[in-house]
Image (cartoon, rainbow, N blue to C red; front, side, top):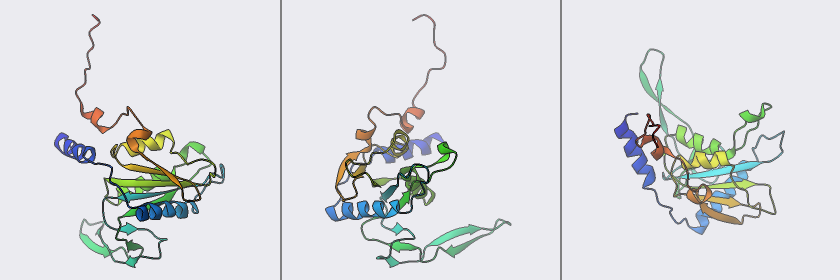
Length: 206
Protein backbone atom coordinates (compact mmCIF):
# COMPACT_ATOMS: atom_id res chain seq x y z
CA UNK A 1 0.00 0.00 0.00
CA UNK A 2 1.38 3.42 -0.96
CA UNK A 3 1.54 6.38 1.39
CA UNK A 4 -1.50 8.12 -0.13
CA UNK A 5 -3.74 5.07 0.29
CA UNK A 6 -2.42 4.53 3.82
CA UNK A 7 -3.19 8.14 4.73
CA UNK A 8 -6.73 7.86 3.30
CA UNK A 9 -7.40 4.67 5.25
CA UNK A 10 -6.07 6.22 8.46
CA UNK A 11 -8.22 9.32 7.99
CA UNK A 12 -11.25 7.10 7.46
CA UNK A 13 -10.56 5.13 10.64
CA UNK A 14 -9.69 8.24 12.66
CA UNK A 15 -12.92 9.86 11.53
CA UNK A 16 -15.04 7.26 13.27
CA UNK A 17 -17.15 8.45 16.16
CA UNK A 18 -18.80 6.34 18.80
CA UNK A 19 -22.40 5.91 17.65
CA UNK A 20 -25.19 5.43 20.14
CA UNK A 21 -26.77 2.03 19.55
CA UNK A 22 -30.36 1.30 20.47
CA UNK A 23 -31.01 -0.83 23.54
CA UNK A 24 -32.44 -3.52 21.29
CA UNK A 25 -29.30 -3.60 19.14
CA UNK A 26 -27.06 -3.82 22.20
CA UNK A 27 -29.23 -6.61 23.60
CA UNK A 28 -28.98 -8.56 20.33
CA UNK A 29 -25.23 -8.05 20.10
CA UNK A 30 -24.65 -9.25 23.66
CA UNK A 31 -26.97 -12.20 23.13
CA UNK A 32 -25.01 -13.24 20.04
CA UNK A 33 -21.72 -13.00 21.93
CA UNK A 34 -23.11 -15.44 24.50
CA UNK A 35 -24.32 -17.74 21.73
CA UNK A 36 -20.85 -17.66 20.18
CA UNK A 37 -19.36 -18.57 23.55
CA UNK A 38 -21.03 -21.98 23.29
CA UNK A 39 -18.68 -22.89 20.43
CA UNK A 40 -15.49 -22.09 22.35
CA UNK A 41 -12.67 -24.62 22.12
CA UNK A 42 -10.91 -24.30 25.46
CA UNK A 43 -9.96 -27.75 26.83
CA UNK A 44 -6.99 -26.35 28.78
CA UNK A 45 -8.36 -23.29 30.57
CA UNK A 46 -12.10 -24.11 30.41
CA UNK A 47 -12.56 -20.35 30.08
CA UNK A 48 -15.15 -19.78 27.37
CA UNK A 49 -15.26 -16.43 25.57
CA UNK A 50 -17.53 -15.24 22.78
CA UNK A 51 -17.47 -12.05 20.75
CA UNK A 52 -19.97 -10.39 18.42
CA UNK A 53 -18.62 -7.66 16.16
CA UNK A 54 -20.91 -5.07 14.57
CA UNK A 55 -19.59 -3.42 11.41
CA UNK A 56 -20.75 -0.31 9.55
CA UNK A 57 -22.35 -2.45 6.84
CA UNK A 58 -25.98 -3.55 6.88
CA UNK A 59 -25.81 -7.33 6.71
CA UNK A 60 -25.00 -10.20 9.00
CA UNK A 61 -23.11 -13.30 7.93
CA UNK A 62 -23.12 -16.31 10.21
CA UNK A 63 -23.86 -19.99 10.12
CA UNK A 64 -25.86 -20.10 13.37
CA UNK A 65 -28.47 -17.34 13.13
CA UNK A 66 -31.94 -18.70 12.33
CA UNK A 67 -34.19 -15.65 12.55
CA UNK A 68 -33.02 -13.69 9.51
CA UNK A 69 -33.93 -13.60 5.87
CA UNK A 70 -31.49 -15.59 3.77
CA UNK A 71 -29.79 -14.17 0.71
CA UNK A 72 -27.25 -15.27 -1.85
CA UNK A 73 -24.03 -13.33 -2.12
CA UNK A 74 -21.69 -13.49 -5.09
CA UNK A 75 -18.00 -14.10 -4.61
CA UNK A 76 -15.21 -13.96 -7.17
CA UNK A 77 -13.48 -17.23 -7.97
CA UNK A 78 -10.09 -17.37 -9.72
CA UNK A 79 -9.09 -20.54 -11.54
CA UNK A 80 -5.57 -21.85 -12.02
CA UNK A 81 -5.42 -20.45 -15.58
CA UNK A 82 -6.20 -16.93 -14.34
CA UNK A 83 -9.81 -16.72 -15.52
CA UNK A 84 -12.42 -15.17 -13.25
CA UNK A 85 -15.98 -16.28 -12.55
CA UNK A 86 -18.71 -15.67 -9.98
CA UNK A 87 -20.13 -18.16 -7.50
CA UNK A 88 -22.90 -17.89 -4.93
CA UNK A 89 -21.86 -18.15 -1.30
CA UNK A 90 -25.15 -19.87 -0.57
CA UNK A 91 -27.69 -19.47 2.24
CA UNK A 92 -25.28 -19.37 5.17
CA UNK A 93 -25.30 -15.55 4.88
CA UNK A 94 -28.37 -13.96 6.42
CA UNK A 95 -29.75 -10.45 6.48
CA UNK A 96 -30.34 -8.28 9.53
CA UNK A 97 -31.69 -4.75 9.39
CA UNK A 98 -29.58 -3.48 12.29
CA UNK A 99 -26.10 -4.10 10.95
CA UNK A 100 -23.60 -6.71 9.93
CA UNK A 101 -22.19 -8.89 12.70
CA UNK A 102 -19.39 -11.42 12.96
CA UNK A 103 -19.35 -13.51 16.05
CA UNK A 104 -16.64 -15.89 17.13
CA UNK A 105 -15.19 -17.72 20.11
CA UNK A 106 -11.77 -18.37 21.58
CA UNK A 107 -9.74 -21.31 20.22
CA UNK A 108 -6.97 -22.80 22.36
CA UNK A 109 -4.04 -24.94 21.33
CA UNK A 110 -1.83 -27.50 23.09
CA UNK A 111 1.01 -25.10 22.28
CA UNK A 112 -0.56 -22.48 24.51
CA UNK A 113 0.73 -19.34 22.78
CA UNK A 114 -0.90 -20.41 19.48
CA UNK A 115 -4.41 -19.98 20.85
CA UNK A 116 -6.52 -17.07 19.59
CA UNK A 117 -8.95 -14.91 21.52
CA UNK A 118 -12.59 -14.49 20.49
CA UNK A 119 -12.16 -10.76 19.89
CA UNK A 120 -9.26 -11.18 17.47
CA UNK A 121 -11.07 -14.08 15.82
CA UNK A 122 -14.14 -11.92 15.13
CA UNK A 123 -12.13 -8.96 13.83
CA UNK A 124 -10.00 -11.18 11.59
CA UNK A 125 -13.15 -12.77 10.18
CA UNK A 126 -14.61 -9.34 9.44
CA UNK A 127 -11.40 -8.15 7.78
CA UNK A 128 -11.32 -11.24 5.57
CA UNK A 129 -14.86 -10.36 4.45
CA UNK A 130 -13.80 -6.84 3.47
CA UNK A 131 -14.86 -4.79 6.51
CA UNK A 132 -12.52 -2.16 7.89
CA UNK A 133 -14.65 -0.03 10.23
CA UNK A 134 -16.68 -1.15 13.21
CA UNK A 135 -19.46 0.20 15.40
CA UNK A 136 -19.14 -2.08 18.40
CA UNK A 137 -18.04 -5.41 19.77
CA UNK A 138 -19.72 -7.36 22.58
CA UNK A 139 -17.71 -9.81 24.68
CA UNK A 140 -19.12 -12.65 26.78
CA UNK A 141 -17.77 -15.20 29.24
CA UNK A 142 -18.99 -17.39 32.10
CA UNK A 143 -17.80 -14.95 34.78
CA UNK A 144 -20.75 -14.22 37.04
CA UNK A 145 -19.33 -11.75 39.54
CA UNK A 146 -17.46 -9.43 37.17
CA UNK A 147 -17.60 -8.18 33.61
CA UNK A 148 -15.33 -9.89 31.10
CA UNK A 149 -12.48 -7.66 29.96
CA UNK A 150 -10.35 -8.07 26.82
CA UNK A 151 -6.67 -8.90 27.23
CA UNK A 152 -3.97 -6.39 26.32
CA UNK A 153 -3.32 -8.06 22.98
CA UNK A 154 -6.98 -7.81 21.97
CA UNK A 155 -7.13 -4.17 23.03
CA UNK A 156 -4.21 -3.41 20.73
CA UNK A 157 -5.84 -5.44 17.95
CA UNK A 158 -9.04 -3.39 18.30
CA UNK A 159 -7.08 -0.15 18.39
CA UNK A 160 -5.69 -0.84 14.90
CA UNK A 161 -9.15 -0.05 13.55
CA UNK A 162 -9.90 3.11 15.49
CA UNK A 163 -10.25 4.50 18.98
CA UNK A 164 -13.84 5.71 19.06
CA UNK A 165 -15.90 2.57 18.76
CA UNK A 166 -17.68 0.78 21.55
CA UNK A 167 -16.81 -2.33 23.54
CA UNK A 168 -19.55 -3.99 25.61
CA UNK A 169 -18.21 -6.01 28.54
CA UNK A 170 -20.97 -8.37 29.63
CA UNK A 171 -22.05 -10.93 32.22
CA UNK A 172 -24.12 -14.10 31.63
CA UNK A 173 -27.25 -12.32 32.89
CA UNK A 174 -26.99 -9.82 30.01
CA UNK A 175 -25.85 -6.86 32.09
CA UNK A 176 -22.93 -4.90 30.65
CA UNK A 177 -20.50 -2.01 30.89
CA UNK A 178 -19.83 0.07 27.78
CA UNK A 179 -16.37 1.49 27.11
CA UNK A 180 -14.63 2.83 24.03
CA UNK A 181 -11.43 1.35 22.65
CA UNK A 182 -9.63 4.52 23.72
CA UNK A 183 -10.83 4.09 27.30
CA UNK A 184 -9.58 0.50 27.30
CA UNK A 185 -6.21 1.44 25.83
CA UNK A 186 -5.29 5.07 26.64
CA UNK A 187 -2.10 6.71 25.31
CA UNK A 188 -1.93 3.98 22.70
CA UNK A 189 0.28 3.18 19.73
CA UNK A 190 -1.49 2.85 16.39
CA UNK A 191 -1.20 3.12 12.61
CA UNK A 192 -0.74 6.89 12.80
CA UNK A 193 2.59 6.51 14.59
CA UNK A 194 3.93 4.31 11.80
CA UNK A 195 3.49 7.09 9.24
CA UNK A 196 4.94 10.05 11.18
CA UNK A 197 8.42 11.42 10.55
CA UNK A 198 11.26 9.52 12.20
CA UNK A 199 14.83 10.41 13.14
CA UNK A 200 17.36 7.71 12.34
CA UNK A 201 20.61 9.53 13.16
CA UNK A 202 20.82 10.81 16.72
CA UNK A 203 23.49 13.31 17.67
CA UNK A 204 25.56 12.40 20.70
CA UNK A 205 25.66 16.09 21.65
CA UNK A 206 22.58 16.32 23.85
